[in-house]
Amino acid sequence: MVKKDKEMTGKQKAALLLISLGPEVSAAVYKHLTEEEIERLTLEISGVKKVESVVKEEIIEEFHNIALAQDYISQGGIGYAKTVLEKALGKEHAQAIINRLTSSLQVRPFDFARRADPGQILNFIQNEHPQTIALILSYLEAEQAGMILSSLPQEMQADIARRIATMDSTSPEVISEIEAVLERKLSSTVTQDFTETGGVDAVVQVLNGVDRATEKTILDALEIQDPELAEEIRKRMFVFEDIVTLDNRSIQRIVRECENEDLVLSMKVSSEEVREILFKNMSQRMAESFQEEMEVMGPVRLRDVEEAQARIVSIIRRLEDSGEIIIARGGGDDVIV
Image (cartoon, helix red, strand yellow):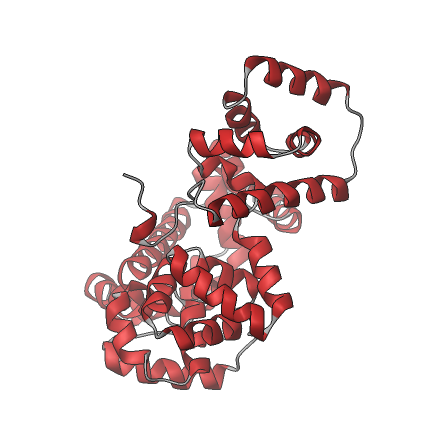
């Protein structure tokens, strides 16, 4: 006999929930768990002999309420979720669900700002210290951050991009203080946590959301301030697999420009989607020749593949700089008509 709902641990509830959902749904859930989590849950499930219908209903209802709360948070934030749940379940029950959910989700700081208009955020932060602006942008969606960065004065853009790229972790106290100020200005509610943000990947995502002119201005300035950082960012701005996002004319131009050896080596370990679009933009004879070569090619070193792909990406960026191909970005000047 299993315990009452309130006496059970989270692991026990999870096991009973999976039993209630049936084998097909449970198997689908297992695909998203780690091996350790699967082992623990399976062990817990194996020890269950009987589940009272009342307990099962309580667990399913609790799971349903948590799922609803998570959906409300994604729609309008913690405050919105709490308000809706209080009306439906009562203040105490709603608070218990929110506390349980936010402790497990670890809702990121500036959650409210990610649903705000970029122009509104810009008005509030444009006169702040560059480090403060960099911190806020690193927590926003890449498209939002890109729009804001593009709208800042050019003399600030490279400095802020560098600060995002070199940012490591920020103390909860600092985040809390900055959040509180922005929260008052945007009239919203947030939940704090300790989160690492920033880094080269973060600034690459931001720069992928700006127009080409802004990107070039920032990278040119970074080239002077920190050449190694600028080069690292450039390497990550466009990767080999991104070829699938280019139009056919651009891909044909790239194929003509690249060495056959580099193309064959790169395609050897690329996705099927990349191979298909490259073969589509070659002559039939060239495609057949490449396919034959790839079939007889033995094992290749990962370093050789990465170097070949890097050479191709370098050619792509050179062709873009000369205006021979277009890589679509967030700015309106890259819209193809």
